[in-house]
Structure formats: structure tokens, C-alpha cells
Image (cartoon, rainbow, N blue to C red; front, side, top):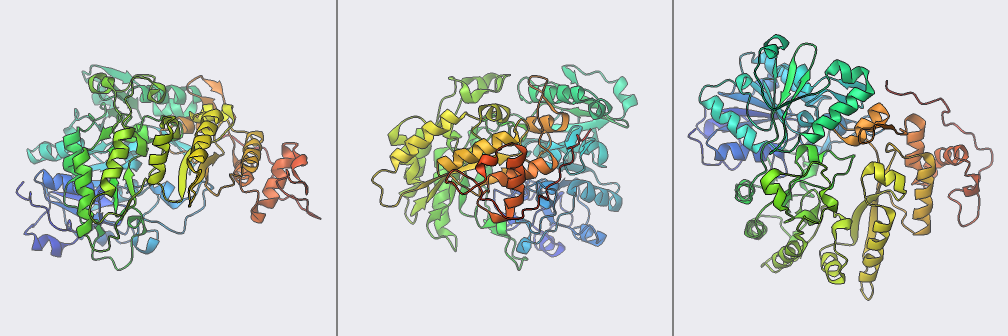
Length: 611
């Protein structure tokens, strides 16, 4: 622990290690992303945090699974390997919602995909084979959301915990700074990662025979892997117990049996304090890709001159896994820390004076707080979005943006992150101030307008969106250059029928809101919506829920692109199936016109359940 001075770039080769006087790095981070030294990229942030704690860290970015030698470029670490699939789950990165292979990856040089499917399993197997004595810690979004038995959309199966499948010693879930630093400190003192069983924010495993004699208190037994695989009711129960125990103050140790091991999750790591957030984001990031790359890393461009102001989200959207990864408690940086970071941009070559974003998962949650968070975390029902105990920080957030824009060399400071429109006060002055920091478009995410669907999404209803839309339009009166409201919408979500999507298309038509911003629901592990998709039940009520699959899912997505001729046959078939032939014609209200000799190619086979 003698390497506290941060290098310009973290080493990625033996030559760079030698230049730093390091024979063997303490920790090697293996990542599915290219190495970009920016706080938005986990390998850089965690590497800097560990270096700041006194450990030497090297990064092995995107090693080639077809070339085992690429895993040996940095040798063996003194303490352990830390392996991540990257900033995105590798299956989400590699495949579309239609399960088609993607042709690009923004986190790779030149946008050319380089990460393997199920990257953590592939990387961990190879590292374990090449360095059988070296401990392995896995983490990142892929490990975090697959830490229990989970539904895997791409194989349409219930899979084991990734820790049960991977030859790893320990799993870090959540953002990881506290847990990873603790693991490094304990490993440095001689403790083996596989024996570390009480670190918050980690998951460990134990053979079934040893588990029987283990004395544990404050535990919650989940339905086993076999039970959740065979029973939708057991899957729903497991999901409910997991979500109920994600409070770092009150969460219990979660236990889930697998055929050959027992998975144990410790309660989440405590939220970071403001000084801790300031220290982490104040480390000397170069905000550039490693100079060894000859091609651009596309993911860097939109975030290079952006600022992360806070973490966490208490929005509670059922399709989003943020609450299960970053947590629901807002952790904000200080005003001075953010201003200092923005002021530093002036010294960076290529800065044009425009700050592309100051925000987090939901930009206008910066500075939000609740006295309960500090004492006992988020309440059990996790419905903070409707709670009067939440103290809004929106005015301080807007003051921050205004002050940042007054800094020398700064021309514009924009809000690039999403905004929770239902949290914006009904105040014309607030709306005008927000509009000042929006470029030509204000992007918000109502997702849908049919009440039954928004309830399954756990999103605000149509009336809330319409009230916001009216205030937004009022704020545009008298402007020389008006702005436009861009709604983000979702198709194919559990509980959404073909009739619901047609109603949404008609709403967009009548309100002149046609948009290309449509997300086809992708079931990612550990979300409530994925539980609905996998089981056909809503775990909140245990009632059956309609699940769009196969051809219906394709039609739902196409329905919101009714102006695109490429989707004509799908839209025609959808309208016919729903008995809405009244929308096929030449009248103004029609979505599509009739075509002579149309052949319906859409499949009419009955959709099958994954079970």
C-alpha cells in the first residue's frame, strides 16, 4: 500500500506497470468496456478509488476470450482479480429486445462489439483456469442484477445466481466503492476473499453441508433455485422478499439454496456521505480514452463534459433496476464540488464551453432528502415519490446550474439526464428556469397514458402528464426559439394489450406527439416487471397479468411507428386483430391507408409461456 499517488492513466500493460515501478499490481480489474478514464466508467472510478486507498491497480480492458494469452498480459495480481462485464449487462449490450444481435457497442473502440455473451462467466472461467490460485471478485451491473436465481430473457429460462455458476469467491453488488475497498484492505491483511462473510454490499456462497452448521441471525430464507424455477408463485415470493430487504439499515441476510451451493446476500452497503461523494468524483480523472486506442470510444463523446451530481433514484419504476443497484436513497455531491469540477473543464483541450449534463438517474432529484433516510433508510413501501416527507432540492439544483453558467469560459450548462416531470412543482418560474437549461427538446418519460398500464409500470397517470405538458407549452409563449416536448414511451410491457397500444397511438396522433422514442420492453433481471413477464403474475397482488409475447410484442412496438411504411403489415394485422379496422382508411383520423392486395404475413400462432 505505497502507491497513493495517482498516475495519469491507470496502467493497462506491463510496460506501463514498469514505468510506475510496479512488479505486480495489487488488483487487476478485468472489464467488458474499453478503458476510458472518466467517472462515468466504472473501471476508471473504482480503480481510482482503490488507488486513492493505497492499492496499485491495473486494468485489463476487453481481453479476447479466443486468445487466452490476452488474459496474461498483466500477469497475476498480488491480492485478487476484480471482474466486471462492463457498464452494461453483456446480453443487453449484445442483443436487441427482439433478441437480434447488435452490430455496435458504444463502449468499444470504433463501436465494434468485443464483449462476449455472459461476459462475467466467460472472463471468470478463463481467469480461474489460467490463475487457479488467485482469488476472484465479480461485480458490476451484470453481476449485481444476477445475484440470485433470475429470469434470463435471452435463453427464456430461470438461471442460477451468477455466483453459483462462476468460479468466483465473492460478488459485489451495487456501486461497490465501500465493499471493494474493504475487500482489498482485508485481503492485504491476509484474509481470503472466500472467507469474507460479513461485508455489506456483498454476496458469498457456502457448501450446503457447511450451511447446516452455520449460526446466523437476522436471516430471510428465499425460495430455492429449484422452487423458483418450477413455481411462478415461488418466483414472485422470492422477488418480494428480495425487494423488501434492500434497505442498508434494516435489510436481513438473504439465503437462497442452489443444488450445489447456498447463496448468501449481506444487506446493502450504506449510502455514501456527501464528503465521500465529493472525494470520489474529485479524483484526477483525465476524462479521455486511454492513448493506446486508435479509434474513438463512442460512449465517451456524449458524457465527456458532463457531471454526475448524485446517485440513487426513488422513482420506483417497475421496469427499472436502478433501485436494486444504486439504491433508493439520494446521495448528492456538494455544491462546491460540482462547481469546481465544471470550472476545471476550461483547462481540458477540446472543451467548447458547453456542459452537456449535470445530473443523475433523475436530474431533478439532486439534493432531495428525507429525515428517515438518515435514520432507517427508505420506508418499506418504497413509495417515496408520493411522500410529503421528501424535501425537494430542485431550487438549489437550478441555482447550481445558473451559477455554473456564470463561470468564466462556460457558455451553456444543460440538463441531459432524464427529468421526473411529476416532481417538478406547478410553478411557472421553475418551468422557465428549467427550460433555460434545456436545448431544443425536453425529454420526459410518461411511458404510457392508459391508466391500467401506468399502474403496472408504476408511473404517473395521463392527467399528471397532461398537466405538465400544459405548463410546458405555456412556458413557450413569447419565445423566439421554441422548445419541444419529447415523450419517451414503452411498448410490450406486462399488462399492456394491443388495444392499449392503439389507444396510445390515437393519443399521440390527436396531440401531435409522434415520436421515434419508443422502447420495446426488455426483461432485465431483478425488476418487478421482469417478474411479471416471467411468471404471468403481478408480485404486488399475486393476480394474473397479460404478458405480450412473440408477434404481439412486435405489433405493439410497430403501432407507435404508424407513419413508417416498413411497419405497415404489422400495424394492419394489429388493427385487424383488435377489431379496429376503422383506423384503416383515407380519413384524417386513420393511422394507415388501405393497400391493394395486402398479404398478411404476421404469425397467428398462439403465444407460448416460457414455462
